[in-house]
Length: 311
Image (cartoon, helix red, strand yellow):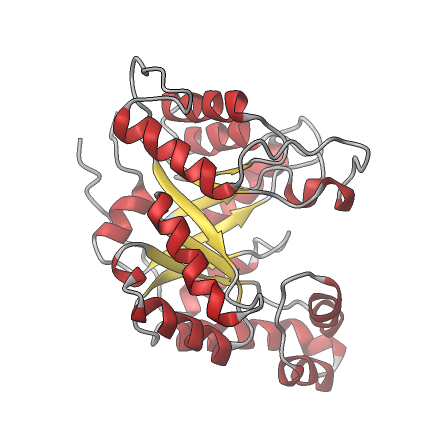
């Protein structure tokens, strides 16, 4: 079994990477997941599978990743520390490696009060940085957090998330540095509408030399309507959607707002590709996976590179 994931090989080969998000269904039928994955196959380098996103119970991320792997895609296992203690987290890391799942994105996760089971007890035995460190220790030192030796270390490509738009701006790059020090080999950011703020964050990242130590992928969520834009601006925590973007969407007739949202996304990708140090994009289409192939094709990012993953 090859040790490098396709995503790792693409990034280490200095290609501009494209990943996309795929949310599992709220049930045991895998057909909906397979249909989403089939849309993304061939137009992205790897597919993130969310882990009970927004604390809503869904088909588990590990099983979903195994299905995507079986379909020939390169899955990114999203793993939150909200629902599992260190025993379960380490066990799942071993399970992922045994299944040939190499990419792991470490997150803390949304609080349970926002989800479908608000009476649940959040675990948070570890935070995302501690999970990164634990996974790296298991992989590189062959040891569990408790110090015990592993019989066979997992083979993992480790990632984390960062929000360049949370305040204070001067702290965000330094927080990223902590994740890189803990083991983050790739970073996927909050979705970007405020390009000016993102450019400033990337400058701080470059000033700290972090773009040379990790692979940064810029998050992107295409807007489907003016209503969606307003919701993102007013209701989604940590989002920075400038008034100019909202006004642009609202000035367009409702029947043409979807195309305007796609146009904005394409303009954003073009601008992102000019930012020094940026190594790719991560598309979070939020149940609109059908738009991903169009965005990738119209951005001139097809075909995706064929890479040597090594032995």
